[in-house]
Length: 489
Image (cartoon, rainbow, N blue to C red; front, side, top):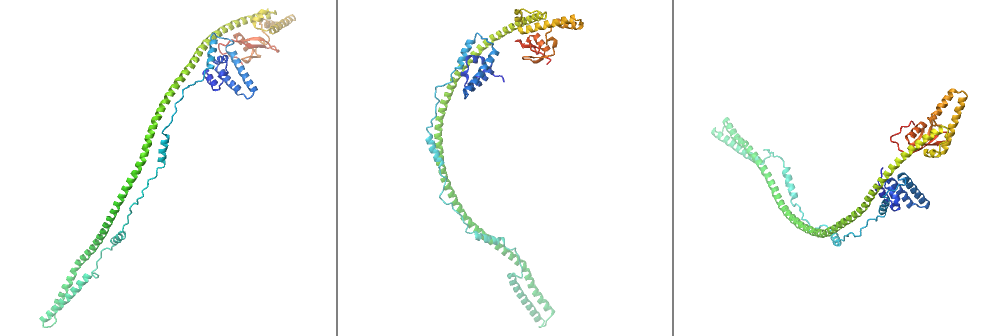
């Protein structure tokens, strides 16, 4: 995560360590917020250390951290704006905390006791009660109604039998008697007419007189049946009328009960409405008190809102003043950074020129050493070689030349040619003569001598001598590669 200087200031403020940074450290944190955040943590550890040893270790770590960043950033460069930057950083470091001397308005509810009293009455308001007894109804005709209804519902179906009908029996006796009389009269009249002698005529006349009355009795059967059925219906209607009369009387009593119940409910509803009216009066009173209290509270809210607006305005002025310092600091640091970039550009041009001078001197020294001659101390100093390295190389080339001379004198033609070829190439031990050997080069790791020599030609590293095994040693230069360098290892 890339931190900003604002992140550092927040971290320092949160850990209460901003006061522990001196102007130089604050200046160092501006282009290096990572340093500022790490330093704030170390200073916080020092402030909260439980022993002096822990505090010393934390302070030492903070000093070492500042030294490493300081060495890697400005290399001792101080811009023309530095004094002014230090002054602004000092102002930021000592910038006071925000304060506002106005007191916030407070709210005092002067209706609280009255509200509590009303609420207490509402809370203890009794349940509705009505001491009047509701009228009750008991049907005095219930048993009689049930008996009459049972008679009607359970009455047998209509049946008629002439043998059991007393009216038919009375008619039967009458007509039998009249038939016997008519038969006797007919026989007497016939006997008188025949001189007292029984004849078939007399018998026939007597039979006809008896049959007449028997037929008259048969003709009465439908009439008697209908009369019996009418009596059955009349009895049913009478029982229904009796039940109707009883029901009417019961309805009169029940209506009287309903009238009493209606009056009871009217009286009860009136009492309940009075009960609700008294309760609603309490609620209305509470609403009125609450409304007045809300007006007072709204007035308090308005005052508090104005207080907050005024406080916010004062805080914004405070922030504006602080941000002006920050903005001014940023412009100063930008100007200083621009000067520093110019300084770096000049340093890079100077380093490049020095590197070219050094490489030229190294080529001259290498050629002089190959000739078996010691270069001048001034030229060695320009090349950057150590005297130890130059002495070793001079000894090496002289021994090589002596070996080549001996090989040539002893008749070793092919070896002489090879030695001469090697000598004329100007190779150094472990360099051109053994380019596959691995050497350790800072910032590049273990690489081959061939790759190391490529870096030398690019001006990215320089030779510093040979180790005890005769391998060349190297050190990085200040030059940065213009493109990625492809190494074989």
